[in-house]
Image (cartoon, rainbow, N blue to C red; front, side, top):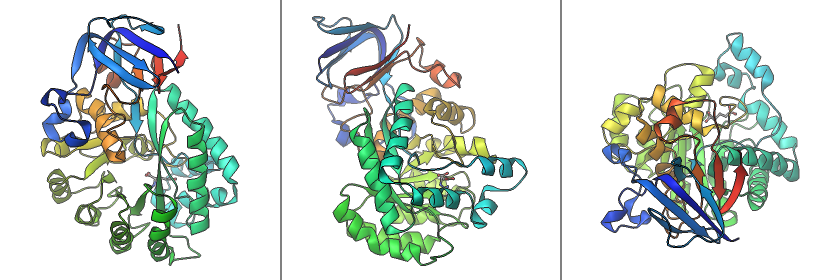
Length: 415
Ligand code: NIG
């Protein structure tokens, strides 16, 4: 793979507490005020060999061999991590876009069998190969925008065969992707009208998931138009029994007690939280569960943004993701998600950077591999066009990073 060095950079390491001698695994997600600490090296370098970071330090490297990128004072930081996407799907939702514009709500479209269910119908018909190919194209587009690790959910199958088909397609695409791809089984995404027992059936399949797809997390959508708290609890109980990581879409439109249940069941993340009430936010802040904010879907659907400021002020660990999907968040742009998190959820730029790198890695359980520029980690780094990281959340709709390096390989070189 060779050697690559990025020199003359403002290095945003995200390795803020390395001086304590702690390893990434010991540190865990950053909560509250710790989210502001970026570990910046004003003028430094990052060296990589055979896909692994070998040096991160001030000044010039001791020797320069192999490929060299002179950043000219620009920001070099860890590649972004998108910890919540629905990028494996077939079909499109352009007619739903027209329905939304005509005044229908996302929930009423879903209740009438459209929305998520229309993507389920299209995805059920697609082959593993077709799904993997389309997903591969989308992953490449994300790589060009500086995303080095991506979570991809199933959830458009909603029967066990089709959920497995999606997980196999995600695995196929991952093999050919320059990124670190993390699959999640979103079997509890919705309840098909022709099989209302699906949530209970999915709970019974969690044992199969643990056996056939080790390391894959479970996820569900706790909402009036989707699964009840009790149905999600049942899925989580099985997941806990088989040591499967738990994640929950909750409080997107209604606060039904999903956050409290998820914390009680030891969920790694609760995602959305636009409608989270004060008690839920306080409980979250006192827990280890990471709050994943998904502001792109609020931008697309309208409504109130999640109260990220209050969460962080009370001590929560917050991550930000694109929520890329064909319906509520038709975007792949993490930079836009970070911009919205600052503009509308009240995060500072430093907090948004932590939310899109270190804390996102923790949400996926991959913080020992990625999420910071640290010797021994996967060599995933981006060089921005800008010389100050505040520009990353100030600007929206571009520009993409000047350079993207994934596993030590230069992906794009403009200029
Ligand atoms: O996180 N809310 C539920 N699931 C996705 C949307 C999926 C879709 O609309 O297809 C979300 O927003």
